[in-house]
Length: 324
Ligand SMILES: Nc1ncnc2c1ncn2[C@@H]1O[C@H](COP(=O)(O)OP(=O)(O)O)[C@@H](O)[C@H]1O
Ligand SMILES: [Mg+2]
Image (cartoon, rainbow, N blue to C red; front, side, top):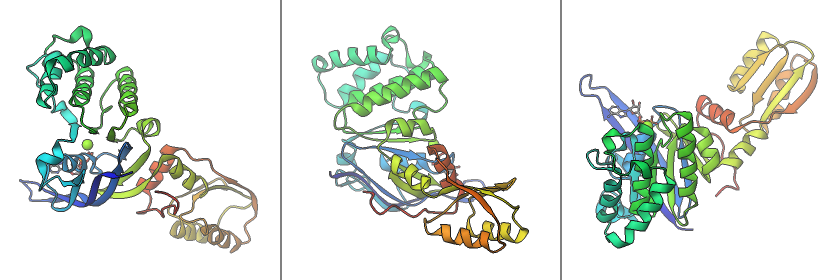
C-alpha cells in the first residue's frame, strides 16, 4: 500500500501579536497515512491537532518540514495536491452560509467539475442519508450546529476526493447528534478507497472507526500504533500488586523515580512499566525491604487509560517492533 499522505517533521510556531510570545504548536511531527486507511489523530485540547490538519490541507505553511500528498508537495505543488483533498474544519469553513443546503451540495460538486445530471441522484442520496432532506431549501445560516456539521461532511463527500480530513467532527454536538455523526462517519469510512484523517479528542470515535491512531501531546507524537496493539502493549505492562506490608517512604521514593506512572494506597500498588523487563527493577525495589507480595495481577487496561498514560506520562513510549 502506497503512502498517500506523508507528514515529515513539520513544525509550526505561532507568534502572539500583543505579547510577542512564541508558541510551538507543532514540534517536528511525522507520520504517514496509507491509501484506504482511516487514521485517528488523537490528542488533548491544545495538542496541535488543528494546526497539523491545516498544514496538511495547505491552509498553513509549516515553518519547517513538509507534507506530501500523492507525492505532491502541498506548498510547492499546491494545486495538484489540493485536487485530492477535502477538509471539514472547525467552524464549517467549507460551507456557504447564504446558500441553501442543496445549493451548497450542488456548488461544491460543480466546483469539482461534475455535471448536473451526474450529481442529482448523489445529492438526493446524501440528503436522505444525512437526514437533511426536509431542510434542503433552508439557508445554512439558519441550521443548527449539528445540521451544519452534517452538511459540511456531506459536502466533503460530494466533492468525491480520495482524501478527507475531518477536524473534530463530533466536537460540541449534543449526544444524539454526536451519535448520528459517528454513524455517518462510519458510512464514509466504509466507502471504498477513501483515505481519511479524523482529528479528535473523542476516544470512542477512534476506537470505533480508526485503523490506526497517532497520538500527539504538546505538539509531539507520543504514539503511532494500531489501536488494538496499543492496548495490548499496555496490557502486558500494567500490574496490580497486593502487598502484605505497607511500603516504606524510601520505597515510595524509589518507585516514583523508576515508574512515574504508579499509584499506591492501602497496600495496593498499580504500576505501568515502561518496558517489560522493568518488572525485575520493580521486584528489586520491593525486595529491598522484604515486602511481602500477596498477589500480582496484570491489569486490563482500556483505551482511555492508555491515552491518559501516554499524555500524562513521560515522553515517548517504546514502539512494538512488529507494527507497520
Ligand atoms: N492562531 C493562533 N495564534 C496563537 N496560538 C495559537 C493559534 N492557534 C493555535 N494556537 C496555539 O497552538 C497550540 C495548538 O493549538 P491547536 O492546533 O488548535 O490544538 P488542538 O487542535 O489540538 O486543540 C495551542 O497552544 C493553541 O493555543
Ligand atoms: Mg483543534
